[in-house]
Length: 189
Image (cartoon, rainbow, N blue to C red; front, side):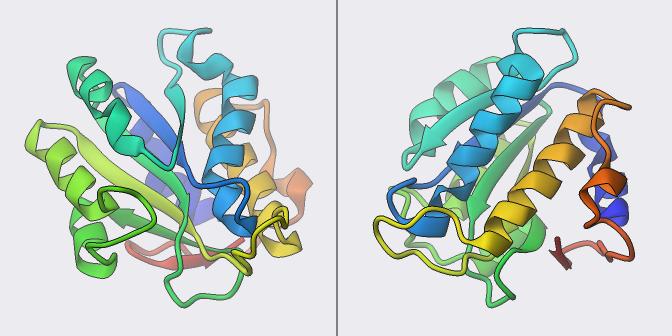
């Protein structure tokens, strides 16, 4: 996770928007929405400081927020979502717009695929990213599984630490040591 944090460091330069996606009634599919809620609480949702990211709880319809995002001139737009990429439950995938378009299906649980949204965002001059977490279960009525809950905690600490250095500690989570984060890598949390 430490190397993943280093790759994400660029998000601090320029304005960033974090969009939490998913359905909290479908098990681990609620990961992105729950992560955005945690980040909004810890970072003030973008209202507490000029350099803080705007955090949006987009749910199942991220396209509803596209106009607002494009009008505000963000340099980085980050989708936070549960994504079945064939990894182990709780494993993390970081993808840029080209990787999203290549590896995500054009049809998804969202009305418009994330690959298409990423392309629209990049066509307007911003960088689009996906922090995807492999779900364990998407069964209705279940909360987040244990491995996805653990990843949520680690990602929250990592992302808050980007904008509030010293306030969050990956070492404290016990889940950071020895993790790899090559471009497009899947990173176990």
